[in-house]
Image (cartoon, rainbow, N blue to C red; front, side):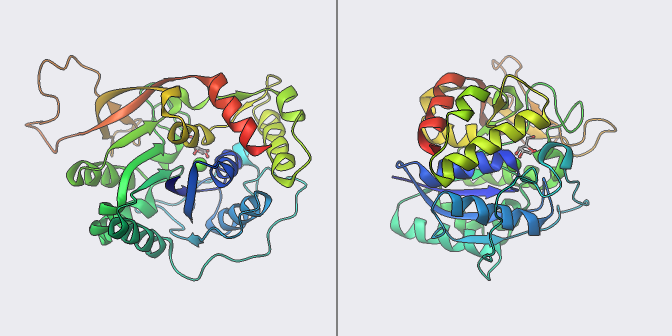
Length: 317
Ligand code: BDR
Ligand code: CA
């Protein structure tokens, strides 16, 4: 089994990712850490506990982390996820509480244990990277427990929060910049599962309606129906963040290319944009005489959507 940690701002599509990670037999879900993003931190925690309960995985440690980004206020997305973050679904909300410690402490402890055992962990940030930046700045030694980082965020093409920027990176650009540069310095491999592929793993409404018979399957059906409704799409809905978990389970379904990557931290209209340097590589693009070097990451360029949709459906049912 592959050890993984999810960092989430649950979120309808984070919920799709959580169901998959909690139930797939090839993954060992070590912990889930929460951060403010799609909704405020308190709702993120309740939503996360609710989804894990539906998946029959209340055993997974959950911790609350940063409520706000490093430098700017949180800007929730109720138009995408509903006021409570889970589309105000007709579904009982968990009454449990998260663990007492901070998310950064839970990440540190799990990663230090992984480093000691040699069973390295894949970290899957599906939200603004505030917790991860705090971790790598406060306890850089914990990076020794990381096998790789596969994050949902950014885009080589257009954004969604703005014309330039994707929501997770736009919400906390400084955090994303810190994580990328730390990963580069510490030698942690990074894959960017960005908007270029995010919408391409689609569950049709017919497929969603075939789900039922267990709490996980019932919730999965409601998540897709609600996402279709909020996106006004009769063709179904993408599992969004869930695709990044598919990429960890089945990397062969994702096409990637290696590119230098930076995060734009200023700019009137471009703050939070991920700058993917696709220029000719005959010159060395990784050492820049004008500033800090970019980090070379695997950028997702295409995905086998049908393959990942099958993977998700067969796991959450
Ligand atoms: C990302 O932002 C959130 O709305 C989703 O949960 C996803 O992580 C897409 O831009
Ligand atoms: Ca998310």
